[in-house]
Image (tube, rainbow, N blue to C red; front, top):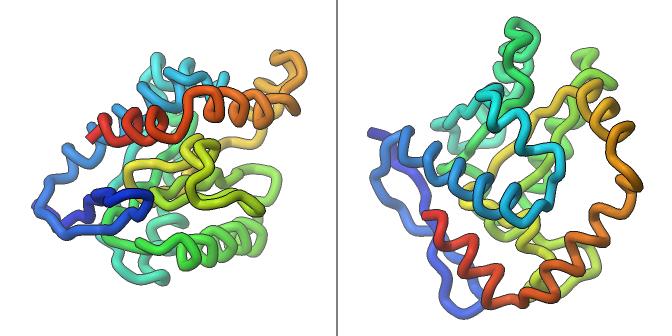
Length: 199
C-alpha cells in the first residue's frame, strides 16, 4: 500500500486529503478519467487507439519532492527507449506537487531535462493536474477541465507518433477551440461531476 493523495472539492476550491490507496486503484481511477473524459469527450482524438491496443504504460511514483519526480520522469524516458511496444507513458504523481504553480515548475524542469538529455524532438510532455488552469482563464472556467485530471501527472508521448497522427487528422489546430466550445456548452457543473465520477 502507498499513501496517495486524493482530492475533494468544496465549491470551486480543490483541496488534497491524504488517504491510503494502493497503486492499482490509482491506475484504475486514472484509466477511468482517460476513458470517460479524455476519450469520452473526444478531447484528444488520438488517445483511443493506443488505449485499445494496450500500449499505454501507467506508472505511479511514490515521489513527494521535485527531484524524485524528475528522476521518475527520466526513468520513464528510458522505459520508452527500451520498449517500442509502449506508445506512451502516463507518470502519475499522487503524493507530489499538489499546487498548480508548483506543478508548472515541474513541467518546465521536465521539458528542460528532455532537451539536456538529447530527447528534444523524440519525446514530448503533456500536462494534467487537478487544479489545471489555462493562462488568462478564471479558475471556474469549464474549459480547464479538459486538462484537470484525478492526480498530477506527466504524460510522455513519442513525437514521431504525434506528427503522424496530426497528418491524418483534418485541421488539428482547431482541436483546442473545439474542446473549449464543448466544455463551455456542457458547463462547469457537468465537467466537474464527470471528472469527479472517475474516482
